[in-house]
Image 1 (cartoon, rainbow, N blue to C red):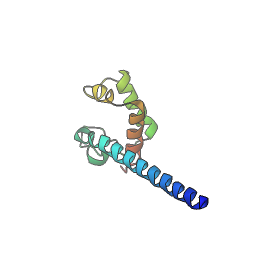
Image 2 (image 1 turned 45 degrees about the vertical axis):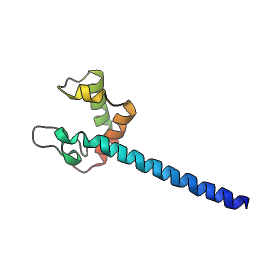
Image 3 (image 1 turned 90 degrees about the vertical axis):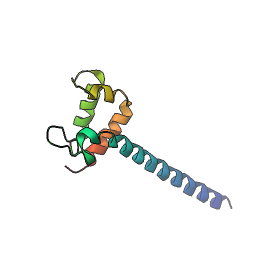
Image 4 (image 1 turned 180 degrees about the vertical axis):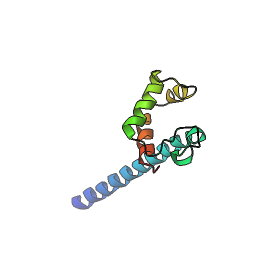
Length: 101
């Protein structure tokens, strides 16, 4: 009986973990959608704007953090980046780095 309860508890925890990871992925994808106006759907921008898809996570994160701190000048990005935590910017960098150019 104890083994069965432990087994069920393990299954429940695994299910909750998978659900939480899926929710995070949807949240990151939702945040990334707000970038599409300038950087294109799936991170591939129109001419004149920077494509984000396929850039290295480290480069993307550095740029976004530099916008946030004011180290890198911008017209809009310095304001937008301040609306995200450093963790969220890292998640966005990972998301765009994983996309194909």
